[in-house]
Length: 336
Image (cartoon, rainbow, N blue to C red; front, side, top):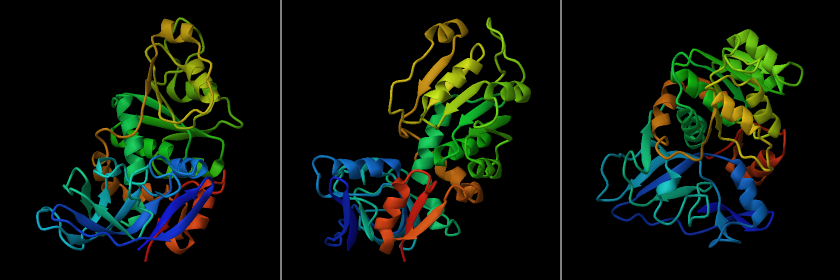
């Protein structure tokens, strides 16, 4: 079978490897779609992660079809459409430095257990949408970390895949009003399509003033605060933190799921005096299949997140497109 691998710093190739043999506790999945993550570009730039540097399989956002089931495995049938938890593979995290990757024709799921390593999705869900399950679990964990309540009002910074997924997640959690801020009009249009109540183009609008219009004034010993309860950073730029803390009222929450690549100055007097909660979010400790239910129920909204579907035959082009700033929002590789 063919697998997309990191072969050297800055280089990838499609490599022929033996098709996996299914053991009694395993399931073999024919990959039908696999998303490309920003971390893939990092692995490529590094030449892969130990111990597979120079030969690291890529791909950790898969959806596929069960084609073979081990004799001891229950809960699956040949032909089931499935999504995968890449974190629990015994041979290492799938596509994240482990021995296997999902940018491949087939993926062996070792010690397969439904609800732990795989979950079945209905056949009507397009594979390219099902492949969003893993990144949307990242978004959902970020939402859960913010402890949203139905009476809350929210501002999501960044209308990329995670920000859009968080927007859907907040609305699915029953939050009354969600605003999305971004610099790119096309992304803001997508935010409205997936359920945002309002958007702010932060390139030409005063974000704090607009929030006060949308969510009212916020209580604080300092003037000019907005009534927004939760600020969600899916953008990863210092201006987001500055803007959120400028607007944040007493008791507001700031959730950070974006990767910041440079230090960010923070006014701790503001955090202390307004008792602002700052919470980080990483991965998806419990959300990998929690989000599946919402993905199934709202798949048309999640479908808006996919900007490009590129055949596996052109996987090198897909990887370049995904790593080029501004070229794409979410690239999903699809298989015949």
